Length: 110
Length: 115
Image (cartoon, rainbow over all chains, first blue to last red; front, side, top):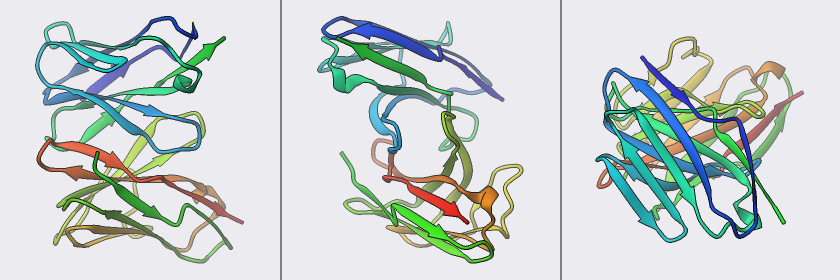
Protein backbone atom coordinates (compact mmCIF):
# COMPACT_ATOMS: atom_id res chain seq x y z
CA UNK A 1 0.00 0.00 0.00
CA UNK A 2 0.89 3.65 -0.05
CA UNK A 3 0.77 6.41 2.50
CA UNK A 4 1.41 10.10 1.82
CA UNK A 5 1.76 12.74 4.50
CA UNK A 6 1.90 16.51 4.02
CA UNK A 7 0.94 19.47 6.22
CA UNK A 8 -2.67 20.54 6.02
CA UNK A 9 -2.14 24.28 5.90
CA UNK A 10 0.68 26.82 5.64
CA UNK A 11 0.85 30.59 5.57
CA UNK A 12 3.64 32.64 4.02
CA UNK A 13 4.30 36.24 3.12
CA UNK A 14 4.31 37.68 -0.38
CA UNK A 15 7.86 37.79 -1.75
CA UNK A 16 9.13 35.15 0.67
CA UNK A 17 10.17 31.52 0.15
CA UNK A 18 8.11 28.58 1.37
CA UNK A 19 8.91 24.87 1.50
CA UNK A 20 6.11 22.31 1.46
CA UNK A 21 7.17 18.87 2.65
CA UNK A 22 5.84 15.49 1.68
CA UNK A 23 6.78 12.16 3.23
CA UNK A 24 5.64 8.84 1.90
CA UNK A 25 5.72 5.09 2.35
CA UNK A 26 5.23 2.82 -0.62
CA UNK A 27 5.82 -0.77 -1.63
CA UNK A 28 7.13 0.34 -5.02
CA UNK A 29 8.27 3.72 -6.33
CA UNK A 30 7.99 4.97 -9.89
CA UNK A 31 7.90 8.73 -9.44
CA UNK A 32 6.58 11.64 -7.41
CA UNK A 33 4.49 14.54 -8.69
CA UNK A 34 3.53 17.94 -7.42
CA UNK A 35 0.34 19.57 -8.61
CA UNK A 36 -1.21 22.95 -7.85
CA UNK A 37 -4.95 23.20 -7.38
CA UNK A 38 -6.89 26.42 -6.98
CA UNK A 39 -10.24 26.18 -5.24
CA UNK A 40 -12.93 24.78 -7.51
CA UNK A 41 -10.50 24.02 -10.30
CA UNK A 42 -8.67 20.93 -11.51
CA UNK A 43 -5.02 20.32 -10.62
CA UNK A 44 -2.26 21.66 -12.83
CA UNK A 45 1.04 19.87 -13.23
CA UNK A 46 4.09 21.43 -11.55
CA UNK A 47 6.86 18.83 -11.38
CA UNK A 48 7.80 15.19 -11.67
CA UNK A 49 10.76 13.61 -9.84
CA UNK A 50 12.00 10.12 -10.53
CA UNK A 51 15.62 10.41 -9.41
CA UNK A 52 17.07 11.91 -6.24
CA UNK A 53 17.95 15.56 -6.25
CA UNK A 54 16.60 19.00 -6.95
CA UNK A 55 14.75 19.98 -10.10
CA UNK A 56 14.32 23.69 -10.69
CA UNK A 57 11.70 25.24 -12.90
CA UNK A 58 11.45 29.00 -12.61
CA UNK A 59 10.15 30.00 -9.18
CA UNK A 60 9.29 26.41 -8.34
CA UNK A 61 11.73 23.65 -7.38
CA UNK A 62 11.10 20.11 -6.27
CA UNK A 63 13.41 17.82 -4.33
CA UNK A 64 13.34 14.07 -3.88
CA UNK A 65 15.13 11.64 -1.60
CA UNK A 66 13.98 8.11 -2.30
CA UNK A 67 15.95 6.57 0.55
CA UNK A 68 14.20 8.87 3.03
CA UNK A 69 10.78 8.73 1.40
CA UNK A 70 10.80 12.51 1.30
CA UNK A 71 10.10 15.29 -1.14
CA UNK A 72 9.58 19.00 -0.92
CA UNK A 73 8.25 21.73 -3.16
CA UNK A 74 10.02 25.06 -2.87
CA UNK A 75 8.27 28.22 -3.98
CA UNK A 76 10.34 31.40 -4.29
CA UNK A 77 9.29 35.04 -4.62
CA UNK A 78 5.80 34.19 -3.51
CA UNK A 79 2.93 35.92 -5.24
CA UNK A 80 -0.66 36.26 -4.09
CA UNK A 81 -1.76 34.03 -6.96
CA UNK A 82 0.30 31.19 -5.44
CA UNK A 83 -2.40 30.80 -2.80
CA UNK A 84 -3.71 27.32 -3.60
CA UNK A 85 -3.54 23.72 -2.51
CA UNK A 86 -0.40 21.82 -3.40
CA UNK A 87 -0.83 18.11 -3.92
CA UNK A 88 1.96 15.59 -3.53
CA UNK A 89 1.21 12.50 -5.62
CA UNK A 90 2.97 9.19 -5.79
CA UNK A 91 3.26 6.69 -8.60
CA UNK A 92 4.03 3.31 -7.11
CA UNK A 93 2.82 -0.24 -7.17
CA UNK A 94 0.63 -0.29 -10.28
CA UNK A 95 2.85 1.58 -12.71
CA UNK A 96 0.47 4.11 -14.11
CA UNK A 97 -1.74 4.64 -11.10
CA UNK A 98 -1.08 7.76 -9.06
CA UNK A 99 -2.13 8.24 -5.45
CA UNK A 100 -2.70 11.78 -4.21
CA UNK A 101 -1.98 13.15 -0.79
CA UNK A 102 -4.57 15.29 0.97
CA UNK A 103 -2.83 18.47 -0.15
CA UNK A 104 -1.33 21.47 1.61
CA UNK A 105 -3.39 24.63 1.51
CA UNK A 106 -1.02 27.57 1.15
CA UNK A 107 -2.17 31.06 1.96
CA UNK A 108 0.01 33.93 0.80
CA UNK A 109 -0.50 37.12 2.77
CA UNK A 110 0.63 40.65 1.92
CA UNK B 1 1.79 21.45 -21.66
CA UNK B 2 -0.72 18.94 -22.96
CA UNK B 3 -4.37 19.98 -23.03
CA UNK B 4 -7.28 17.94 -21.72
CA UNK B 5 -10.82 19.12 -22.25
CA UNK B 6 -13.66 18.04 -19.97
CA UNK B 7 -17.29 18.73 -20.68
CA UNK B 8 -19.66 19.82 -19.24
CA UNK B 9 -18.11 21.97 -16.54
CA UNK B 10 -21.29 22.01 -14.52
CA UNK B 11 -24.47 20.00 -14.61
CA UNK B 12 -27.60 20.05 -12.51
CA UNK B 13 -29.96 17.13 -12.89
CA UNK B 14 -32.94 15.49 -11.26
CA UNK B 15 -32.59 12.39 -9.16
CA UNK B 16 -32.90 9.23 -11.26
CA UNK B 17 -31.50 10.67 -14.46
CA UNK B 18 -28.19 9.75 -16.08
CA UNK B 19 -25.38 12.17 -16.78
CA UNK B 20 -22.55 11.74 -19.25
CA UNK B 21 -19.21 13.51 -18.82
CA UNK B 22 -16.67 13.64 -21.64
CA UNK B 23 -12.91 13.82 -21.35
CA UNK B 24 -10.80 14.55 -24.42
CA UNK B 25 -7.07 14.81 -24.92
CA UNK B 26 -6.73 17.58 -27.50
CA UNK B 27 -3.11 17.45 -28.61
CA UNK B 28 -1.96 13.97 -27.72
CA UNK B 29 -3.23 10.42 -27.76
CA UNK B 30 -4.02 8.80 -24.45
CA UNK B 31 -4.41 5.06 -24.15
CA UNK B 32 -5.00 5.57 -20.45
CA UNK B 33 -7.27 8.07 -18.74
CA UNK B 34 -8.32 8.33 -15.14
CA UNK B 35 -11.51 9.40 -13.42
CA UNK B 36 -11.39 11.01 -10.00
CA UNK B 37 -13.92 12.28 -7.56
CA UNK B 38 -13.22 15.06 -5.12
CA UNK B 39 -15.24 16.04 -2.08
CA UNK B 40 -14.99 19.56 -0.63
CA UNK B 41 -11.63 20.21 0.98
CA UNK B 42 -10.53 16.64 0.31
CA UNK B 43 -7.99 15.21 -2.06
CA UNK B 44 -8.62 13.38 -5.29
CA UNK B 45 -10.04 9.91 -4.99
CA UNK B 46 -9.33 7.64 -7.93
CA UNK B 47 -12.51 5.98 -9.15
CA UNK B 48 -11.28 4.06 -12.16
CA UNK B 49 -8.62 3.71 -14.81
CA UNK B 50 -9.95 3.91 -18.34
CA UNK B 51 -8.09 1.90 -20.96
CA UNK B 52 -8.63 2.46 -24.66
CA UNK B 53 -10.26 -0.54 -26.28
CA UNK B 54 -10.73 -2.52 -23.09
CA UNK B 55 -12.72 -2.52 -19.88
CA UNK B 56 -12.05 0.05 -17.22
CA UNK B 57 -10.38 -0.95 -13.96
CA UNK B 58 -12.43 0.20 -11.00
CA UNK B 59 -11.11 0.96 -7.54
CA UNK B 60 -12.44 -0.91 -4.56
CA UNK B 61 -15.81 0.37 -3.47
CA UNK B 62 -16.70 2.02 -6.79
CA UNK B 63 -19.79 0.53 -8.42
CA UNK B 64 -19.05 -0.25 -12.05
CA UNK B 65 -22.74 -0.42 -12.95
CA UNK B 66 -23.29 2.99 -11.43
CA UNK B 67 -20.32 4.70 -13.05
CA UNK B 68 -20.04 3.50 -16.63
CA UNK B 69 -16.79 4.23 -18.39
CA UNK B 70 -16.19 4.02 -22.11
CA UNK B 71 -12.85 4.69 -23.77
CA UNK B 72 -13.64 4.12 -27.41
CA UNK B 73 -10.84 6.13 -28.97
CA UNK B 74 -7.35 7.32 -28.16
CA UNK B 75 -8.61 10.81 -27.38
CA UNK B 76 -11.96 10.30 -25.68
CA UNK B 77 -13.19 8.71 -22.49
CA UNK B 78 -16.68 9.13 -21.07
CA UNK B 79 -18.07 8.65 -17.59
CA UNK B 80 -21.81 8.11 -17.25
CA UNK B 81 -23.34 8.44 -13.83
CA UNK B 82 -26.44 6.27 -14.08
CA UNK B 83 -29.60 6.87 -12.06
CA UNK B 84 -27.96 9.73 -10.22
CA UNK B 85 -28.88 10.44 -6.61
CA UNK B 86 -28.08 13.42 -4.39
CA UNK B 87 -25.17 11.56 -2.81
CA UNK B 88 -23.54 11.42 -6.24
CA UNK B 89 -23.21 15.20 -6.19
CA UNK B 90 -19.51 15.93 -6.35
CA UNK B 91 -16.65 17.32 -8.39
CA UNK B 92 -15.57 14.80 -11.02
CA UNK B 93 -12.18 15.24 -12.66
CA UNK B 94 -10.61 13.30 -15.49
CA UNK B 95 -6.98 13.07 -16.45
CA UNK B 96 -5.17 11.71 -19.47
CA UNK B 97 -1.78 10.05 -19.36
CA UNK B 98 0.68 11.64 -21.75
CA UNK B 99 2.76 8.60 -22.60
CA UNK B 100 6.01 10.23 -23.65
CA UNK B 101 6.62 11.72 -20.22
CA UNK B 102 4.19 9.57 -18.21
CA UNK B 103 2.50 12.65 -16.77
CA UNK B 104 -1.20 12.99 -16.05
CA UNK B 105 -2.82 16.15 -17.34
CA UNK B 106 -6.17 17.08 -15.91
CA UNK B 107 -9.40 18.33 -17.36
CA UNK B 108 -11.11 21.32 -15.78
CA UNK B 109 -13.54 19.14 -13.84
CA UNK B 110 -17.32 18.73 -13.80
CA UNK B 111 -19.40 19.85 -10.88
CA UNK B 112 -22.43 17.59 -10.64
CA UNK B 113 -25.42 18.59 -8.55
CA UNK B 114 -28.25 16.09 -8.24
CA UNK B 115 -31.50 17.49 -6.94
